[in-house]
Length: 294
Image (tube, rainbow, N blue to C red; front, side):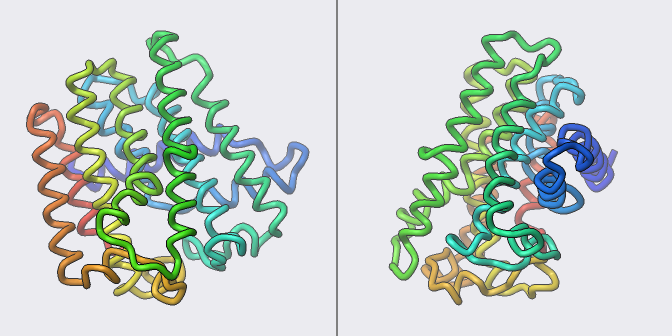
């Protein structure tokens, strides 16, 4: 199976799992459930589920088991986007080619959508996972919680908000994005590996891969924000510069940022050497993240 076919299959599988896991809009409170589904379904690249499935495949994890951590991470990611777009944070009106949640519904509903998606993620991940020992499942819950909180994604967003209007060093920017973007990406990779009962050495190698991929994703995102159109991105282009936010492009310049992306990609590939051909999909995803145009 070639990479585009595999990727499309995982994306469709993830969409179906999300449809099944999200509360029906026919259930009360209907407006909240409708807004949750609006914010999650029918959009996004599903990079985190792709990484989760690709990592799990190295260790022979069953796709039906990988669905739960994949959509749990995706729900946390979607909640973060809903909150990031709100007027109190990035104040954006477009996401995935359609009005943001607070624009389509209202600010109070958007706030509750984020809250509900976060708890729904842990509801999904805490259900019985066939073949996964309870102690390992607790480790998985702890991993996602840590990646989502003040030492992970939420903390990274706090640093990001505090950095507006300030000139950061590359090291300070990396500190921020290892948390804001990288923590959930790392969690997706490691959760997939846990489903295949990867050992400590394997988790260490995958952790290094995920750290590089997390930064790579952000560097490319900064380049696209500076160079791509709103129509291509599905969100407001040039927003970071307009909001005076520090990015890899504003600090390094576009040329150096692109060179950094190539170095990060190579580091990610090198981290996968111990897995040989079994890590093919992770290699392909690293290339996809660099070459994507949206």
